Image 1: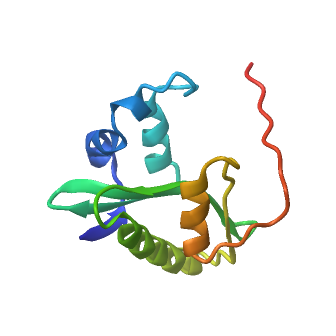
Image 2: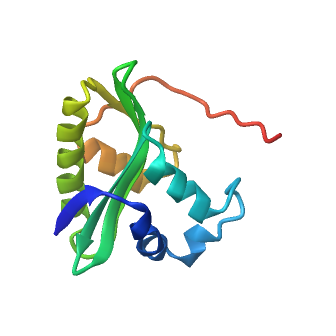
Length: 139
Protein backbone atom coordinates (compact mmCIF):
# COMPACT_ATOMS: atom_id res chain seq x y z
CA UNK A 1 0.00 0.00 0.00
CA UNK A 2 1.15 3.48 -0.87
CA UNK A 3 -0.27 6.62 0.77
CA UNK A 4 0.38 9.90 -1.01
CA UNK A 5 -1.19 13.18 -2.01
CA UNK A 6 -3.50 12.83 -4.97
CA UNK A 7 -2.79 14.44 -8.32
CA UNK A 8 -5.14 15.37 -11.15
CA UNK A 9 -4.04 12.18 -12.93
CA UNK A 10 -5.66 10.21 -10.08
CA UNK A 11 -9.06 11.85 -10.61
CA UNK A 12 -10.78 9.02 -12.50
CA UNK A 13 -9.48 6.37 -10.09
CA UNK A 14 -10.76 8.45 -7.17
CA UNK A 15 -14.20 8.77 -8.78
CA UNK A 16 -14.24 4.98 -9.36
CA UNK A 17 -13.37 4.50 -5.70
CA UNK A 18 -16.20 6.82 -4.65
CA UNK A 19 -18.68 4.79 -6.68
CA UNK A 20 -21.42 5.87 -9.04
CA UNK A 21 -24.00 6.40 -6.31
CA UNK A 22 -21.78 8.93 -4.53
CA UNK A 23 -20.57 10.59 -7.74
CA UNK A 24 -24.12 11.13 -9.00
CA UNK A 25 -25.59 12.40 -5.70
CA UNK A 26 -28.25 15.04 -6.31
CA UNK A 27 -27.20 17.23 -3.38
CA UNK A 28 -23.74 18.04 -4.77
CA UNK A 29 -23.71 21.72 -5.70
CA UNK A 30 -21.22 21.08 -8.52
CA UNK A 31 -20.20 17.90 -10.30
CA UNK A 32 -18.24 15.41 -8.22
CA UNK A 33 -15.41 15.59 -10.74
CA UNK A 34 -15.06 19.37 -10.31
CA UNK A 35 -15.40 19.09 -6.54
CA UNK A 36 -12.69 16.44 -6.14
CA UNK A 37 -10.40 18.19 -8.63
CA UNK A 38 -10.69 21.43 -6.63
CA UNK A 39 -9.54 19.59 -3.49
CA UNK A 40 -6.57 18.17 -5.37
CA UNK A 41 -5.33 21.44 -6.92
CA UNK A 42 -6.17 23.99 -4.20
CA UNK A 43 -3.15 24.66 -1.97
CA UNK A 44 -5.44 25.27 1.02
CA UNK A 45 -6.90 21.77 0.78
CA UNK A 46 -5.48 18.28 1.04
CA UNK A 47 -6.42 15.00 -0.61
CA UNK A 48 -4.49 11.88 0.31
CA UNK A 49 -5.15 8.52 -1.29
CA UNK A 50 -4.15 5.01 -0.37
CA UNK A 51 -3.38 2.84 -3.40
CA UNK A 52 -3.06 -0.91 -3.57
CA UNK A 53 -2.21 -2.54 -6.91
CA UNK A 54 -2.80 0.79 -8.67
CA UNK A 55 -6.38 1.04 -7.32
CA UNK A 56 -7.54 3.62 -4.78
CA UNK A 57 -8.67 1.83 -1.60
CA UNK A 58 -8.86 4.81 0.75
CA UNK A 59 -8.90 8.59 0.89
CA UNK A 60 -8.78 11.46 3.34
CA UNK A 61 -9.61 14.98 2.23
CA UNK A 62 -10.32 18.35 3.75
CA UNK A 63 -9.12 21.88 4.29
CA UNK A 64 -5.92 23.32 5.75
CA UNK A 65 -6.15 26.49 7.80
CA UNK A 66 -2.42 26.81 8.42
CA UNK A 67 -2.68 30.47 9.42
CA UNK A 68 -5.17 29.44 12.13
CA UNK A 69 -3.31 26.24 13.09
CA UNK A 70 -6.01 23.71 12.26
CA UNK A 71 -7.11 21.25 9.61
CA UNK A 72 -10.68 20.23 8.83
CA UNK A 73 -11.28 16.64 7.72
CA UNK A 74 -14.15 16.62 5.23
CA UNK A 75 -14.10 12.90 4.68
CA UNK A 76 -12.03 9.86 5.49
CA UNK A 77 -13.02 6.58 3.95
CA UNK A 78 -11.68 3.19 2.95
CA UNK A 79 -13.15 0.08 1.39
CA UNK A 80 -12.49 -3.59 1.76
CA UNK A 81 -11.72 -6.14 4.40
CA UNK A 82 -9.06 -3.97 6.06
CA UNK A 83 -10.85 -0.62 5.88
CA UNK A 84 -10.19 0.44 9.49
CA UNK A 85 -6.52 -0.52 9.20
CA UNK A 86 -6.22 1.58 6.03
CA UNK A 87 -7.92 4.52 7.76
CA UNK A 88 -5.57 4.21 10.75
CA UNK A 89 -2.49 4.25 8.52
CA UNK A 90 -3.77 7.17 6.41
CA UNK A 91 -4.67 9.19 9.48
CA UNK A 92 -1.24 8.60 11.02
CA UNK A 93 0.41 9.85 7.82
CA UNK A 94 -1.99 12.81 7.79
CA UNK A 95 -1.06 13.73 11.39
CA UNK A 96 2.62 13.71 10.38
CA UNK A 97 1.78 15.96 7.41
CA UNK A 98 -0.13 18.34 9.71
CA UNK A 99 2.82 18.60 12.09
CA UNK A 100 5.06 19.71 9.20
CA UNK A 101 2.51 22.46 8.46
CA UNK A 102 2.45 23.51 12.15
CA UNK A 103 -1.17 22.36 12.51
CA UNK A 104 -2.12 21.74 16.16
CA UNK A 105 -5.81 20.80 15.86
CA UNK A 106 -7.61 18.44 13.49
CA UNK A 107 -11.40 18.73 13.51
CA UNK A 108 -14.47 17.56 11.62
CA UNK A 109 -18.26 17.58 11.72
CA UNK A 110 -20.38 14.44 11.62
CA UNK A 111 -24.15 14.03 11.41
CA UNK A 112 -25.61 12.47 14.56
CA UNK A 113 -26.98 9.46 12.69
CA UNK A 114 -23.65 8.55 11.02
CA UNK A 115 -22.70 5.99 13.65
CA UNK A 116 -19.93 4.35 11.62
CA UNK A 117 -18.22 7.70 11.01
CA UNK A 118 -18.53 8.63 14.69
CA UNK A 119 -17.00 5.27 15.64
CA UNK A 120 -14.17 5.77 13.16
CA UNK A 121 -13.27 9.21 14.51
CA UNK A 122 -13.35 7.91 18.08
CA UNK A 123 -11.03 5.03 17.09
CA UNK A 124 -8.66 7.65 15.64
CA UNK A 125 -8.49 9.33 19.05
CA UNK A 126 -10.71 12.29 18.22
CA UNK A 127 -13.02 13.57 20.94
CA UNK A 128 -16.49 15.10 20.70
CA UNK A 129 -16.49 18.82 21.38
CA UNK A 130 -19.81 20.55 22.05
CA UNK A 131 -23.14 20.22 20.31
CA UNK A 132 -23.47 21.92 16.97
CA UNK A 133 -26.14 22.35 14.32
CA UNK A 134 -25.29 22.51 10.66
CA UNK A 135 -26.99 25.32 8.74
CA UNK A 136 -27.03 25.79 5.00
CA UNK A 137 -28.62 28.14 2.54
CA UNK A 138 -28.61 27.45 -1.15
CA UNK A 139 -28.52 30.57 -3.29
